[in-house]
Structure formats: C-alpha cells, structure tokens
Image (cartoon, rainbow, N blue to C red; front, side, top):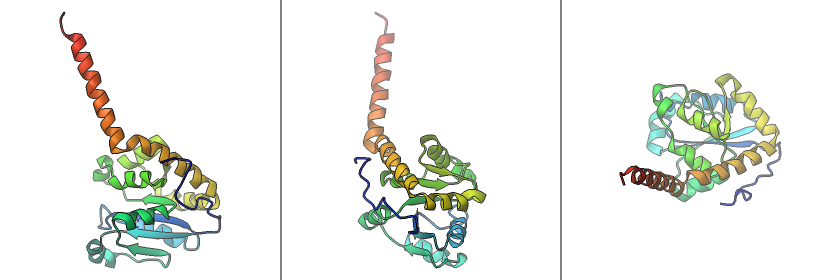
Length: 199
C-alpha cells in the first residue's frame, strides 16, 4: 500500500466523534475490557467505541459489563471486519497488567498496523514495547488514557500522521518481509560457515 493513500476519511473534523475500535476476546481477567468501557463512558460525546468479538464469547461474558450508549458490540470477520477497521481511527489494547501479556504479542496488533490504525495501549507488556519502539501510537498509564484521547480528538492531524507512519512500518512486518529476513539471515550464516571452512 502507498502510505500517502489512506482508505478512510482522514480529514475528520475535530467535532466528529473519534472512532475507537477493539478487536478480540472479552473474557476476564486476561481480556477484561472494563478500562476501555470506562474510557468510552468518560468521553461519551467525543468518542464512539466498537468492540468486535466472537458472538459466543460475548454472550458468555456480557453480563459482567455495563455498556455506555456510545459503545457497540459487533461480531465480524473477513471482509466485514476489514471494512470496519477502515472506518476506524484508533485501535485500543487497554488491559490490566498480567504475566501473560508481558511476552504475548497479539496478532490483532499487526492487523491494526496493516490497516494503518495507530494503537493506544498501557505499558508493561510486549505490545506496548513494540508500539513504543516503532512510534505506532500512544503508550500511556491508565490515569492518562482519557487526556491522551482528548488530545487526539482535538487534533485530527495527529491521526493522519500516525496512520501514514503505521502503513510505512507495516510494510516491514508483512509475512513476505519476515520470510525475506529469515532467508537473508540463513544466507548470511551459510556464507559465514563457508568462509570458516579450512582451505
């Protein structure tokens, strides 16, 4: 994809609600989305949140959550999921800290990246380290989430800048790019081994 071309209304006016999206399980404690829902409630007129999760998963855990009026839950996959991501502004990965998250790199992070979605997440996990290293969004403590999103909402150019950057970085993290890295490494090692053989 050409990073200068973003498949989405990038000229979002500052008075239009921010389209925040979360894709994944909602099963506590590892996938507890309570923090995300509290954030949506605090920004009710400035943000709309879409939670995309499996239907059976949601039915099992929905009773533990209270959904603010600006939150929708959808059960999408394939092209419908891709279309929803293209209509979003920012991807959310806001979870409580856990041992599992310190080493787990969510596949949804790369899905968001491939769609040019900047990511907001909390520190102390593998995803946050990746986001921070590559400047793919905002790594913030829980107490800073609402203020950070308010700043993003009031400055639409931030989203455009981050989206273009995410698309550029995504080109380095496709399966093809990763396969090429492996082949280059193997080729380099083989050349090194050959050079070490006695003449």
